[in-house]
Amino acid sequence: MIKCISHKKVYLSEGIAEDALIEAQTRFDYAPHGGPIAVYRCEDCGYFHLTSKGTMNQKLSEYIKGGKLNRQKEADRWENKLKRK
Image (cartoon, rainbow, N blue to C red):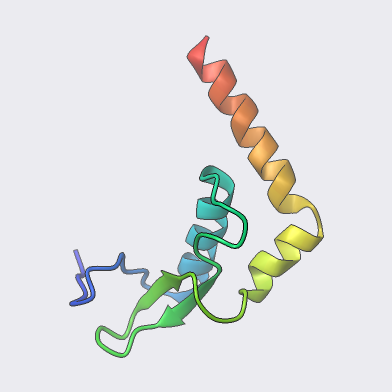
C-alpha cells in the first residue's frame, strides 16, 4: 500500500481520484460548501488526493449541474433502505 507523508488517502491516477470524489459526494451528507470538491497531485508523493479547497473539479461540477449527483444520492438512499429490510 502506497502511503504519503501527509497521511491523506492516495489515489494512483487523477481519474480514480475523480471517481472517489464523486462517490464521496454521493455517499456522505456534507454541509453546504463542505467536503472535498477537487483533486490534486501531491508534491510529496506524486499521487493524487482529494481537497476541499480551490476550484471545483470539472467532472464533479458537471455531475451537479446535470442532476446526476442528486439522482445517485437518491439511488444510494433507496439501496441502503432496501438492504436494511
